[in-house]
Image (cartoon, rainbow, N blue to C red; front, side):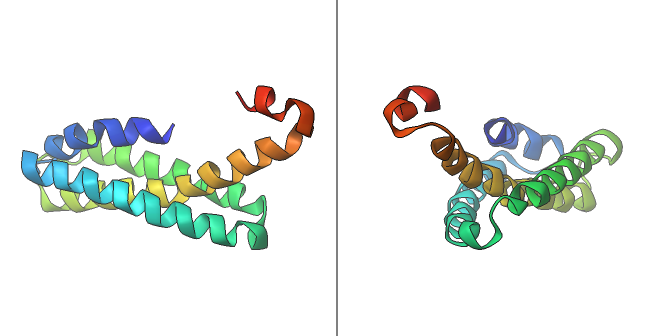
Length: 121
């Protein structure tokens, strides 16, 4: 789910008018942001519990919708499209970190200890 945006980030960034070197740097920046936000999500997960999943779902839907609308309707090579695309991708990863951290912990809690290794596969 999250990897699709990261895989195609250089293509998405070049389609809105950013240069290829800026597109690669933007992809690296999004990867760094992903690590930072996931670390924060792991720290606050116990406080907010599974409510993070609802907020994460809504945030991912809105940010992907905005990314799609920017790609489809805003002209390439415009500053608004470039900034909006970068912001939408970053917001997507901020909200995706909620799912990435909560779901992996929750899946481990569902299965009994004897079969947990097989159940998580």
